[in-house]
Length: 305
Image (cartoon, rainbow, N blue to C red; front, side):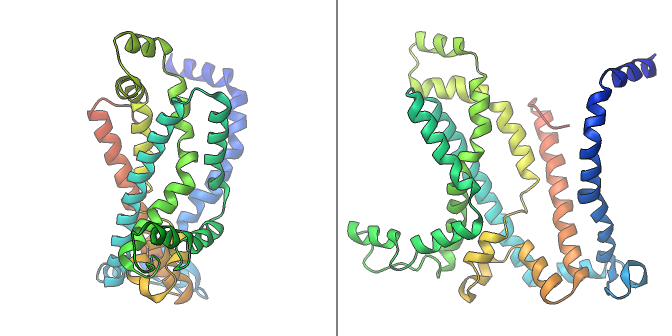
């Protein structure tokens, strides 16, 4: 009986299944088939010999990786910058969506939305060039701070390791805040207006309505996006760290796992060690997604699975 019902549902939606076939093929070719390269992590891989001709060494690459101080420094940098990007990115996007929802002038609201989206479409090369220009010793930031009397001499924002993580975090916020707020704005638009009217009749002001109506109304969206973003907790980025932290003064705080993989995989030619680092990153990401999903289920929130 169940097989018969399943067959009827498939037959009824056969056009949708046909449409999804190209997506499945694309995903297999570019997402799953490349995973065969993970075998390099367990070999002393030599390109001339290929996968099956290279010597199998078991977990030797992972042992070397976990004993390497440079890898753990890259791991620390990746986790810290990812957490900063996650926290600030979430907070600023949600706050921006809440404030934008309170704008009553529709033309000004549309213009603000459009302007906030634009940085997302800029490449990191352009963004990093703007950041370097703004934070230079004679840039606009140092000039304004000097005029206001906050500093007496120019600050080398891109020469001091203690500033680098903050520069990366706020560069990400500036570039992605407007784009990340789109889904929150869409979720807010689905809240029943009667709830706002009832809260207003009870004497709630704008901030009270945001706290007691808007935020609970988009809580499930926030939880789902948080779970999805936790899977990228080890994706602190590559371009911004590589472009802004290319000088020797910042190498201790700028190198991420992605840069570590590039260094060993492309520069040194140790493909096995680079693959082991990338594999470690993927396994941690999958574990974090399942853990966050389980916590969301226990708390009674919406989850992915």
